[in-house]
Length: 119
Length: 217
Ligand SMILES: Nc1nc2c(ncn2[C@@H]2O[C@H](COP(=O)(O)OP(=O)(O)OP(=O)(O)O)[C@@H](O)[C@H]2O)c(=O)[nH]1
Ligand SMILES: [Mg+2]
Ligand SMILES: [Zn+2]
Image (cartoon, rainbow over all chains, first blue to last red; front, side, top):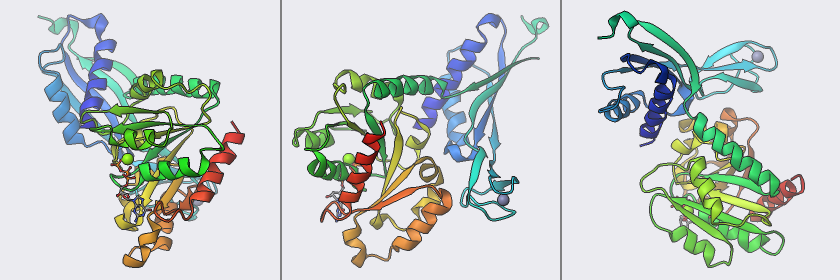
C-alpha cells in the first residue's frame, strides 16, 4: 500500500526533472532505498510499473540500489554496518552511535535516450 | 544514453508540508506528539486516560487517523475534547498533508497539547514526518517483548516508548526487562513509561512528562 504512494512520488520527481527533454524516451530511473525504510523493493517496482502505464514514463525501468544501514560511533569514530538489530559499535561496543546510512529514499539518476536516438 | 543526475528525496513533498505544520505548531505553542502502535495497543485508551487526568490542567486537542470509521473520534468527542477524524480509506499511514487539512477544521490557537493518533501500524508510519515534536510508540505487553527487534525503524525513530497493558503481565510470558533491553538496544535514548489504561497505573508520570514539555514550549 505505502509503496504505491512512494512510486507515485518517484514518478512525479522524474516528470519534473525531465520536462526539458520531453521528446526523449525515459529509459532508466535509479533510486536508493535505505535498509531501514521498510520499503519492499518488489512492491515498489510493481507499483511503479502499474502507475507508469499510459504516461511518458511507460517502458522505463525502475532500478533500486539497497543501501545498508551504517552507523558511526560517537566514542571511537569507527563506522559499522548493522543488520538492523543492534545499534552498537563493532569496535568498542558503544551504543552512542549516529545512523549515517539506511534511511535514504532518493531518486539519484535518470537515463534518457540520446538526441541521436530520438525517432 | 544520457544521464540526468537528480539527488531528490522521494518524500521531499511530505517533508515540506511537515515543516509548514511544524511552523504552525510553533506559532500556536502547541506541544505535538505523533502516537504510533500496532492496531489495538491502546493509543486511544491512553489518550482517554490522559484527558481524564490532565483535562483541568491543560487544553488538549486530538487528531484521529484511521483506515475506516470515526469510532475513535467519537470516543474522544464524548470527553468534550476537540477532535478531527482523518479517514485514510485504506491508506496505511498518515501523511503531513492530511494533518494539514485536519488542522483547518480544528482550532489549535489556544491548544497546549495536540495528539495525532496515527493509523495502527508498526511499519509504514515510521518514515513520515507530520511536523510533530516527538514520535511516541505504544507497545502493549500482549504483543511480546521481541517487537522492538522486529520493527527497528519504528523504535529508532521514536523518542518515547509507552509500555501499555501492564495489568496483564501476570497472565503473560512477556518480560518487561527484556522488552526494555530490546528497545534500548535499538534506541538507547528512548524515554520509557509503563502504563495500564485499565487501572490507571503509570499514567501520572506520563502526564508529568507532557506537562514538563509544555513548559519548554
Ligand atoms: N487490560 C488492558 N486492556 C487495555 C489497556 N489499554 C487498552 N486496552 C484495551 O485494548 C483494546 C484496544 O484499545 P484501543 O485504545 O482502542 O487501541 P488503539 O491502539 O487505539 O487501537 P487502533 O486505533 O484500532 O489501532 C480495547 O479493548 C481496550 O480496552 C490496558 O492498559 N489494559
Ligand atoms: Mg485508536
Ligand atoms: Zn566505537
